[in-house]
Amino acid sequence: MERNRLLPSGRVGTGGGVETSRRTLHAVTQHGTGAGCPAWLALIMHQVEIATTRETLLDSPEMVLNMGPQHPSTHGVLRVILKLDGETVIDLDCDIGYLHRGMEKIAENRMYTMIAPYWDRLDYIAAVSNGLVWVETVEQMMGLVVPPRAHYLRTILTELNRIASHLLWLATHALDIGAVTVLLWALREREEILKIFERQFGARLTCHAWRIGGMPNDTYDDFEPDIRRFISNFPTRLDEYETVLSENRIWLSRTVGIGVISAEEAIAIGLSGPALRGSGVAWDIRKSRPYAAYADMDFDVPLGENGDTYDRYLVRLEEMRQSRRIVDQALDNLPDGPVNAKLPKIIKLPIGDYYHSIEGPKGEIGCYLVSDGTAQPWRVRVRPPSLINLQALKQMCLGHLVADVVAIIGTLDIVLGEIDR
Image (cartoon, rainbow, N blue to C red):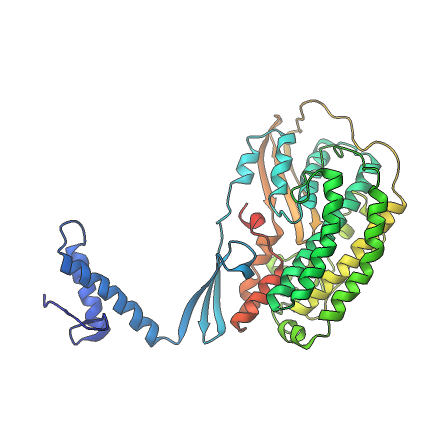
């Protein structure tokens, strides 16, 4: 074999270009690069690899770019692999699993009452909602009657959680697009909700709010005045957000017509929550299959028209107004009585399987539970809205610019703890 000469640029040159380089690479591969490989041969192989990669990139108008897993706008350890023609996205793939910790498999080795805290760590921005789907699944499967007061308090606190989740979404989404002021405003209001959670549950984020059969404790002394104070001020704050954003020409240019998905496409993918309703699909589990005390509440389901990033922004703003409306009604009609049902010391569910879901802040979060009649579940499976909604990212990004990918990831409002589990 003719020994190649190393050019100053680092390329391997024998006069045959990249094809010769590939033949040399094949020859080097046949010799191997183990302990017995001559140093000059190993060096040639390294240089051939560089040359082949460089020529391939230079000859192609396309470029592969990694966004994440440490990129702040991916909202977690999500690696988005972009294939670009200039700045236009022509293909996209998501690499997930960096936060995987086997929550569903862990649940198969825990008693039913011990599993609840693991649900808080899925969508850690909506721990109150996560915990509710688990305890309601167990309660419904065992036919347990939960006191009405517990149902109303669950409704109040999960709606406050919805507002807190949407506020963090708005804060980070606005920051991604360049609106720093809204970040400070939205976190200011969210802080008031977290203070209520801290006084009620003893924690601000992963609250472990519920117990099978009801709640660990009744409300603290100033529970109702604290919530009344918040919901009385909140409409003014929402108006401030809209004043800054809704007609801002930069905001409009970054959201209108960006990430469009039709109602038919959204249904086919399995979208839920604001991502689905932004495309005009009137599906909200609180209305379609009421749970807790939602059957007693009067509220509207906001819908978008165009299925773009701007419509999903408007849907979430209106959802916060409707959540405030639900909280107000639930406080007005809050019944007296206990907050816990009587339970056996060891919970055993009847043999069989059951599925239950609720309307979380990001969409339908569900639990599929299989019981073998023992004190531990035979199988637990989570239906995570963030994972399902992430499937739409490729379709929503194709044909847009790299900068638009940031806005589209934000409009899906994903949390990686829920995606990876």
